[in-house]
Length: 180
Image (cartoon, rainbow, N blue to C red; front, side, top):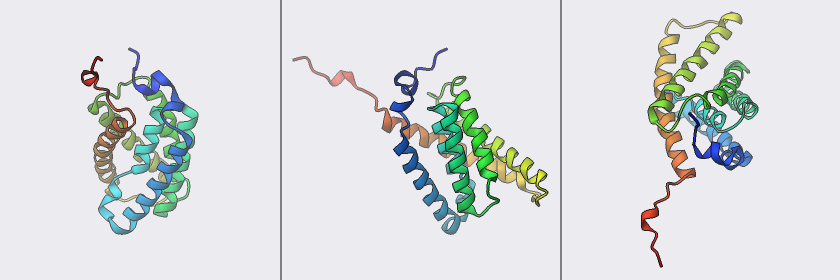
């Protein structure tokens, strides 16, 4: 089954432009800084994962990887974590998102939700394995936090990316066109 989303029809350059990636990265970084200091409960929302998945879906593997690396390092800087921990996981997810977009349909909200939840759990698994290799302390409630983050990120990401698609690709209503 061929994916007939606007990105696949008109090509990558019509969907995710370089200036748009820069604006999304700066906005995501600023929001993460605000969330880190003023809204501690919003730390369960992984904005950079949502944006990396969106870029990976509508771009090639190289652009998805580079966006994952940039957004992951920005997230490491915003949260003061080990530098490169999120960079590694977001790079892998950005690369995989390009290939996942060829296998699944993202027209439906449930498809976006399922893929975002699975990628959020994969992100948590990569973090966990990296922390194990580096012999860093891991809390006993780590996986509970990962599952909560996966749910919150998937809901916000699925709805937010759907609205962003509607903004970028407005539906045409040809019933209102009059014949002169």
